[in-house]
Length: 238
Image 1 (cartoon, rainbow, N blue to C red):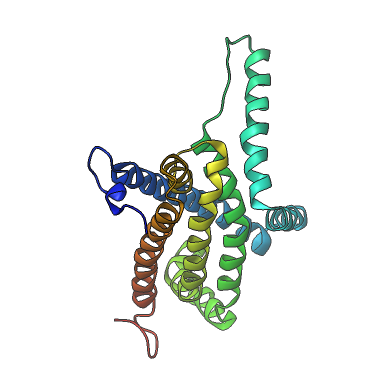
Image 2: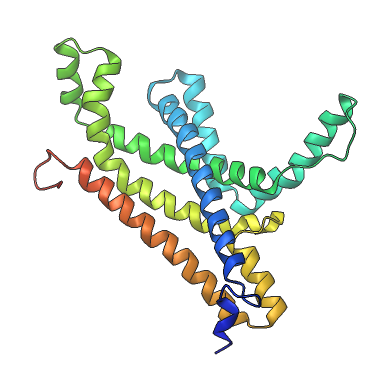
């Protein structure tokens, strides 16, 4: 079964290192999700209200980032990013060496992947809002901002929150791929601990527990947000 003392916080335990790695996993995931939300909102807007070139550009973006393997995108940002930074630094005459943060590369790569998926969730949520409701808001003289704030956003959130919760869960699992950049998040730390102690089952099981804790707690947050979004709707809310 393995020596459970290795998971403790004592001098011979890996507990503190695993805790730090879990917090780093959470930090990467939150940063990537927020990056994806900002970009995804812009892409969804381009596909809904943009002109023809913007719509086609947004469609191409979603096709590319939903079709290319996640690990390849991370490699492109990490190794390709270092080459770009080196080229720019050399051109400006700056002293080397040049490098790119594994956190930054991983966050941007996962954020871009997530943005393509989040844009589809947001676009579908907007299209689920009854057109008659939007027209009624325009008839009574609502500005576009007021219409969005009071009519579109509250109704779209009812549809969007469950899908965004699924995207968040995907981001957490994709964050394990960031270990290829050398960033010491959960997957990297359990691999190091397992290799050092030869207690592979113990530490990989501990890694699974860390991911399950993060996903379970965050799932409860999204469930609460979903219930709050249902307030005022028939049969929902708290």
